[in-house]
Length: 392
Image (tube, rainbow, N blue to C red; front, side, top):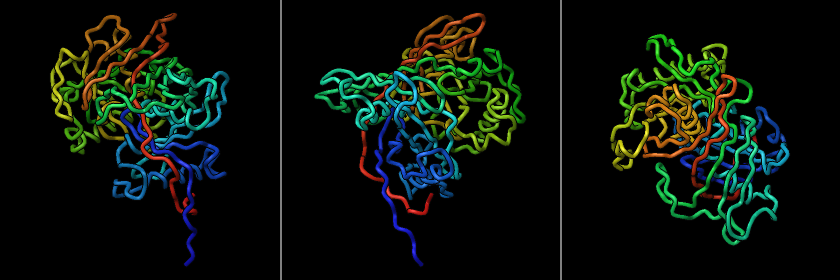
């Protein structure tokens, strides 16, 4: 039998925050993959190694976690006063689909560097030394993100001493601003309430804050579902009943938020919404063995991504946490002690993270103006990724 040879596609494998993914320039993709559709999805699935019934992604670049089963496509800007368009695809591990419904806040930290290296940022805007401000149009959610990328001798500076819990080695700090992070098509609180009663069959009626800032997120109280808020990955991910419970909560919350019309649609929309549970601060030992003291944090938060507890915190969920903490009366705000605040330090399975947010109430409607966090990013490998020529 004759089999088509493999083709090679220019790609860069990058870490951004606590995530990793394959980065592409739109013009480098095969022609039929330069437009949205089945061909593009099939190509990205093959690059990452999905769908994989073994859930290992051995035959691709994925590492069999939601944090590493990711793809990014950058293109020339479609919006004025922006440097680049950023499109994010969350690749399912065991199913044949790519979820385009949301952003990846962690990989955003790498987008600025890739945009500079990929020629999307005008050379006269890149200083010899200092910081390059990269204006990013997040195409999935139609929002502006501004990345502050350190530059040394005209090149992106990747090494440094900035430490990020959930990442083993230090690197250069990249400040990221999420501008107007709330959903522009409706209320930041889709139900119109800061706290709802969410009825979940088999679980009960849960108090829930459902917010669309950074990424659609459903916040619930840890104690209402039998947890402390100090849980690590294995405590949740080794428990099939717990994972099923969280997926049921997510599906019913998605319907109430208006993200899907029917529960059956949740299976094909794994990336959003997220489910997170919160609790008041207590001390715990992180997954790396680091002692986290109650006095060092404002709130405990654990969040699930693609059906599993995240090993740290999704960047977009961090935006939701910061925004919700800034609005008096939400479950997150109540867990941090109530009142007005412009930043929050929360404890997650790998350690802590400080995030700032600004929110205001206008004519009875809450809106977020900005969320800010620091991440880091670096190139792990660059060159070409090879895929069978008939995979797409």
